[in-house]
Every structure is written in C-alpha cells, then in structure tokens.
Length: 223
Image (cartoon, rainbow, N blue to C red; front, side, top):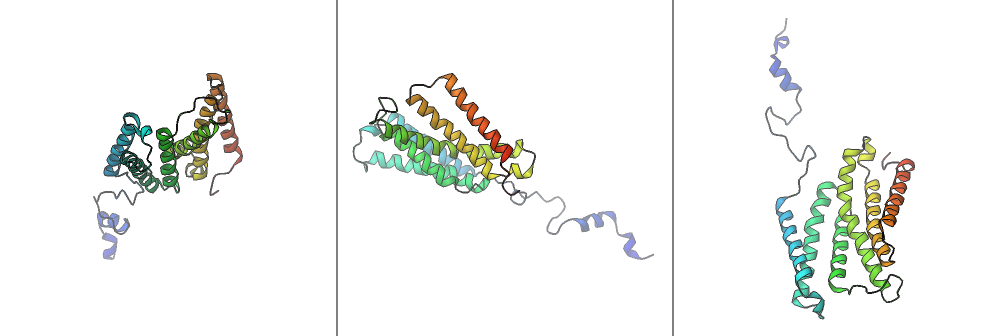
C-alpha cells in the first residue's frame, strides 16, 4: 500500500481549500461583496447639511440680492458639498449609476428654491404663481426620487425571492420615480386647494395599483 493513502485528514482538508485562503484568516469584506460607507464622508456630509439648514432657517438669505454675496456663496458650497458627500459614496457602494447626478442636482434645486424663490401666495392656476409651483414640483420629484432609490433597492433585495427581481435596478428606479411623483402630486393638490386625506389616499392607491400592474406584466431586467 502506497504512502499517499495515509495522508492525514487535516492535510487533505487544507488541500481542498481554495488558493490564497489560509486557515483562520479573517473574511475579506471587499471579496465577499460587503461594502461599507466610510465614516469620515458621512460625518462631513452631516456637518454640511447642518450648516446649510442653519443658513436656510436662521440666515437672511432671502434678503441678499447679490447672487455672489458671501452668505449665498457659503450656502452654495455647503449644499453642493453635502450632496456630493452623500450620494457619491452611496452610488459607489451600492452600484447605482446616475444616483450622484440626480441626488446632487435635485437637492441643490430644492434648496435653491426654498431659499431664494418667493413662496406662492395664490393657487396653482394663477399665472404668476404657476412657474413657482412647477419649479417646486420638479425639485421635489428629482430629490425625493434620488433619496428613495437606495432604500427601495435595498428593500427589494430582502423582499423579492427571485434573483432577477432583487437585482433589478430598472424596477427600483421606477418605484423611486413613483415616490417622487407622489411628493410632486401632493404639492399640486395643495396648490389646487384639494389636498385632503381622501385625495391623498386615492393618489396612493392609483400609484400602488400601477406598480402592481408593472410587476405582473414587466419582466425583470436581465431575464
């Protein structure tokens, strides 16, 4: 009987392990697909958002007529920096293409509208007020969709059983657009003076029904 038949069990187990992996070695988070949002950008983003909100609520931005006034420039920098530090790491960690552009653009437009555009005093169909409502609805749709996309994509990976559905970015983006549409429609209903619990529930029911029809008829991306 040859000596190869008496190889110890421990040595056989080590020979069956993949190359480059030693017994007791820690699991590589990057190799296993687990990616974390760095702590430093998160803290910097929080500070930038806090500074921008402080200027928006406590500052006198609406009194600054010069677009290049120091207080305005500081507000611009804080908003852009907060958007970049928030959405760029999320886009990279979750592999969501286009999220950074949508998030930075939407939040910047929303903050600019809230800070410098006079609030409407009449209803939506009053001609001088219509552009203000349209601008606010566009900013809300863009920013709310960007904020909702990472949450919807992460929730879909836990809810759906099929791999194609869990990793379907097109489905997640469509659902985030529906959330953004809901936010914009709330502003439209308020501008038309018809925002009630009944109209809001009816709007939610319409969007949920439309999404169920999409899920039943549209195939997942990659199938």
